[in-house]
Image (cartoon, rainbow, N blue to C red; front, side, top):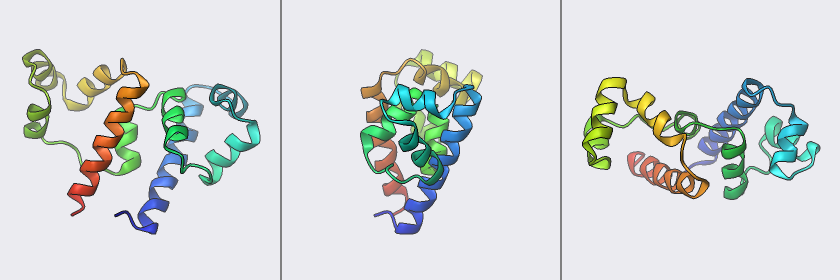
Length: 137
């Protein structure tokens, strides 16, 4: 299980990344709030304190609206990077493996995951969290 301290660190990295991504996208807090269907004050609280970031679907919506990359998600959850062997087990397609070897793991994942739909991102998050818990022992 995740400790209270680990949960706070995840929340801190999430709010930091939310703010950074919003600014990179040149969006105002009001605009992000509208895209999420929330009022501006609620979004300001989410981004500044992380209070209210306990709902999985709210977090998924934030990932979608702010175009979080898989790298962003891995950073937020503080997951160790996958090894090439683990990637080979996940990807049986030779073309994808060739792309990973030639361009690098992060570049390939970024290209592949940019086309994901929300339900796929949800599965990735569940898989990443399960992997995180497994690796933590």
